[in-house]
Length: 285
Ligand SMILES: CC(C)(COP(=O)(O)OP(=O)(O)OC[C@H]1O[C@@H](n2cnc3c(N)ncnc32)[C@H](O)[C@@H]1OP(=O)(O)O)[C@@H](O)C(=O)NCCC(=O)NCCSC(=O)C[C@H](O)C(=O)O
Ligand SMILES: [Mg+2]
Image (cartoon, rainbow, N blue to C red; front, side, top):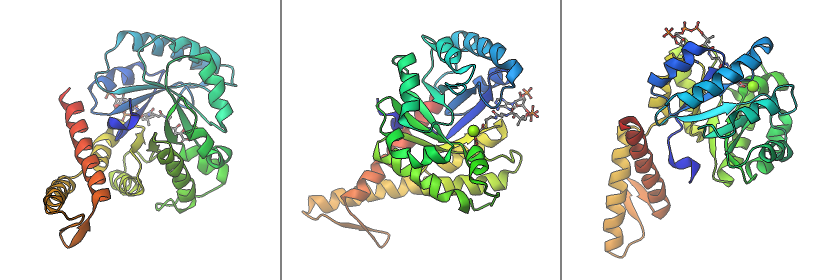
């Protein structure tokens, strides 16, 4: 199945150790959940969190939300046990942190069959190797880890994310070249709705499928930013109608709102309508 055929607007991290948050997520309108065993879980809680999460995933219906488990690094004390604990459980992907190369994916792929892999893109070496990582046959998605990346690059926070733009675009290029999902990093100031909206709009403009989140308060703004707007849906419908009318007259170009519409714009228009339908189906289900 094409991993991009479903919505990935809002992808919420939940610490695997937080029972209340694991329960609460069942009622949140998110497209996907990342159940985190890595940075959100303290060292002394790692084993308990893994057991709690495995039990929860075995017993809990998360509806249409995609379920992704972020394991600890495969070369850490916990990584191999994390992977083993989720074999056979109902999950949609395993997310590997701090992926530096395709070889990091090979190691996890050899340890668990059938489950799609996702990669955290958050190290300078990983960004430089984005093309070979995205080309891995088991990889279905990339998630930007902008906190780790900012740390390793030594950047300072800027609202326009100028120091990170090149890395974001390299990942998008790699993901798009290989037809996989690409989700933007988190916005740390989780009570700052205006700042989140600006960053969501930037990510949407760049071409990300959605954004990773750390708190339920961020869901509504993010879902709105990454869904096709009413205006976009209306334009897509009018472009398709105008182009089909032009084609019926033997023409290859139509004009809508003073702008040319060619078959490549129709591909985008159809994708917009398909995304709106997929979102509606997820919300209805
Ligand atoms: C940021 C938080 C620590 C804030 O926690 P808290 O103060 O407890 O929040 P609230 O009291 O406002 O919570 C209100 C209710 O919402 C639930 N809740 C909170 N967070 C979540 C969540 N993430 N998912 C589901 N539900 C959540 C609370 O349980 C409250 O419920 P109720 O009792 O019914 O009122 C906290 O939000 C948090 O821990 N967030 C996740 C942090 C995290 O996962 N960090 C790691 C991922 S980020 C990262 O590593 C990115 C990457 O690797 C990089 O490098 O950039
Ligand atoms: Mg990180």
